View 1: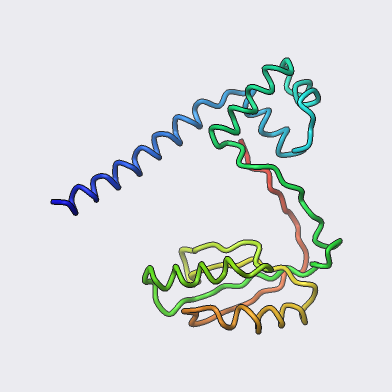
View 2: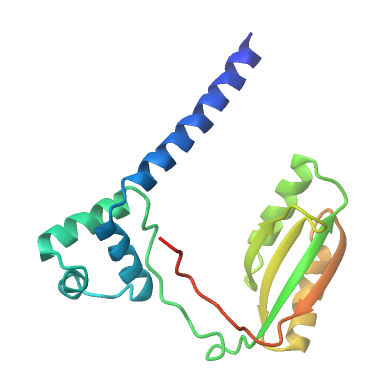
Length: 177
C-alpha cells in the first residue's frame, strides 16, 4: 500500500509541476516577453533604460522584473567571458558511452563530471552515446592533458569519442520567448 501511495504521490508531484509550468508560460504577456528578450541581450541594463526599451514606467518595470525573478523565469545574471581572452580557444565535444544504465552508474558518472572545471556542459542523451560533454581547452595538447587527468578516469565509461570544433558558427545564450 505504501508503495502505491508513494508512486501516486510522485505522479501527482510531476503533474503539478507540469501544470505550474504551463500556467507560468501562459502568464507571460507580450511585455514580459519583451523584458526577457531585452535582458537576455543586455543583462546589465539599468531599470531606467530597460523601462524605456519596453515602454513601461520604471516602477512597473521593476515590479515585473522582480516577479519574473521570483517565478523562476530569470534564474540569474552572469558575465559572459570571451574564451579567447582566457586562452580557451579550443572546443571539444566528447561523446561518452557507459557500461551500464543503472542509477548508481549514472549518478557516479555525473558527480565526477561535475567536478571537472573544463567541462562546460554535460547532457544525458537519447541515441548512440549516453552523454555529450562540451569541453574547453587551450589547444589539442591541453585537451590531451584534460583527457588523461579527468576524462580517462571517469567511472563507468565503456567508450569515448572526441570531436574538435573547427569554428563556432552560432552561439547564443538567448532562449526564444
